[in-house]
Image (cartoon, rainbow, N blue to C red):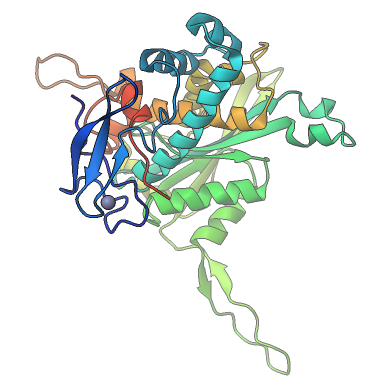
Amino acid sequence: MAPIDHFCCQNSDCLQAGVRGGENLHIRGDSGKGRRIRLVYCRTCKRSFSERKGTVLEHARLPDEKALALLNHLREGCGTRATGRLVEVDKNTVTRYLAKAGAHAERLHDELVALSPRTREVQVDEKWGYVAKKEASRDPTDPLDRLRGDDWDHTAVDPESRLLLALVPGERDGQTSERLIRQVHDRTGGRTDLLRTSDEHAPYETAIGQVYGVKTPRPRRPGPGRPPWPAKVVPADLCYATVRKRREKGRVVEVVRALVFGTLYLLGRSSASTTINTSFVERNNGTDRHQNSRKRRKTCAFSKDLAMYRAASYSIGFSYNFCWPVRTLRGREGEGPWQARTPAMAAGLSDHVWDTRKWVTYPTKPR
Ligand SMILES: [Zn+2]
């Protein structure tokens, strides 16, 4: 019988709502017509709730195995229609489960990767994708085209643990870049001593200044007028460097590295890199394009709906962090057997490889 140690009371009015690992919960009987869905009872608020409350399987009509197979196919690079054919369900059933899985994954990521204390380096990048049609084919007068066209996943990856620290989809502009940098700030506890690298996308520099800058008063000029606004000054120990690749006929002929803020003293402690690079976030882009059929190039499996596109990004991103053993992260003690490790394990956020059932049935906290 699956443990409920990680459960929390789903009654939002309860004093222990959202508190995991408490002594207040225990199993009290079953519900569901012959499906043996357990009822969890909370001693604090004296209410009970289904073990499926707050999970992807809440109100699910498909048998568990079918629902899990459906989500497994999606994360292994099958498109919606291919998944429907393989699992023998309608394509609309596939998208319904995908939407639930995406929302669930986004909330779980916000909780379980809220803070990554071991992260010492971050590489950020923007990954192109599109919904229904490419940007050049959009008709600005067609209201349906408002949610179609290019969409950019702004991602932050920890090169040492390969953890997908933050994912912010949106336009390729300053606002999205700032939201990404703010998430990096929050998920690393606001530490400034991180080695940050990116491509030469200019908004990152502004965003780092905005998010990490400390308000410093500026000297007032003699004469009348209001005092000047304080300036935002980036702390001295903050490090940010960029990599620019110059291409000729599609091939990289030169890599230009530039230090934007701070010094490179942090590079010496890196277990992943000896030079400024964005290789790890680019490798993550490759893995994501491999796992997410919507992002594969030159196929017909592209997304037709923005909400589904983003739901797939979140669910596959979460499953990458917690379920995907990365070959180069594996470890062994002495001559013992090799142990698989996921990015979340390398980052100290989990102690085992999760399977799809685990994260799909891991209840989120009540709102
Ligand atoms: Zn309760």
